[in-house]
Image (tube, rainbow, N blue to C red; front, side, top):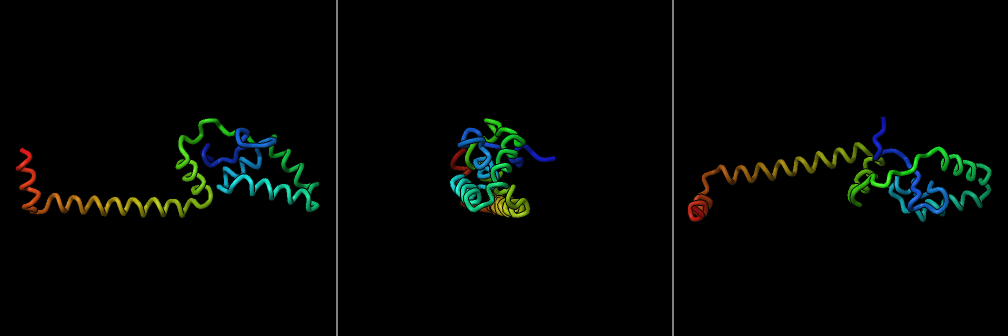
Length: 126
């Protein structure tokens, strides 16, 4: 079962015709201009009997992108990375969590250890 954030949609808001190229661009994280240029080059290069029907079929089969699917551009980039390489994204998140855990352990060590300067500062605040 796919999450709504990992599904290919046609992006009618950013699309020119049916929004298929914009949807592919949103899904892959590639600029829509490059996707459109690739589609035009494929059409001109003689693959038009396949490109045009594939575009039309995708335009009618793909669902419209929900208007509020992503709340921020960071979220859009995150989900594009998840779609491109879920294992790499999980590794990056694990690495960030390990770093946060290490930093928190350092803070705990600093706080719990016998630190006369910290004790003095706390006493001055009282």
